[in-house]
Image (cartoon, rainbow, N blue to C red; front, side, top):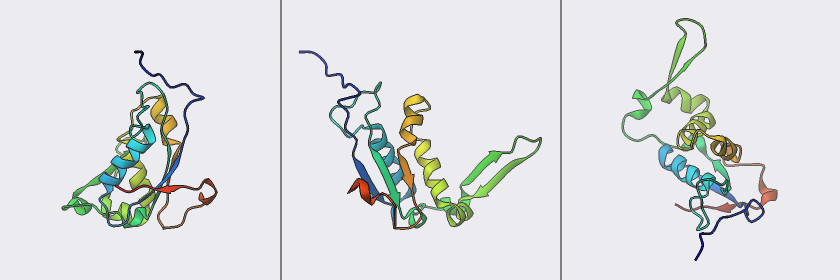
Length: 142
């Protein structure tokens, strides 16, 4: 018996909607990363891009458990000497919840060409509306 190797023509991509309202940010991000990589499929192989499209709605209503909302920080460097910027997640979730969710998912995806291709299939929206109704996305329960 030989091992199944999917080809690019054999891969079918579905669209899924994840509702992040009242769910922990990390749990939603982990589920999205699994769907983006295709690990939920029986035909998954780590060397092929067999993941699906993911739409995350209500990113502004995602929660951070414990005291992370006040203690967790987002750091980035501007490129100039001494310009390390830090933003609390309480501020980040109020101003840019889509960025916070995208950053969480990106941290769970491999830093390879397959990971970069998977991140192009992620769509995050702060509200409950999204413009992808024509793709007929299915609701993913987790």
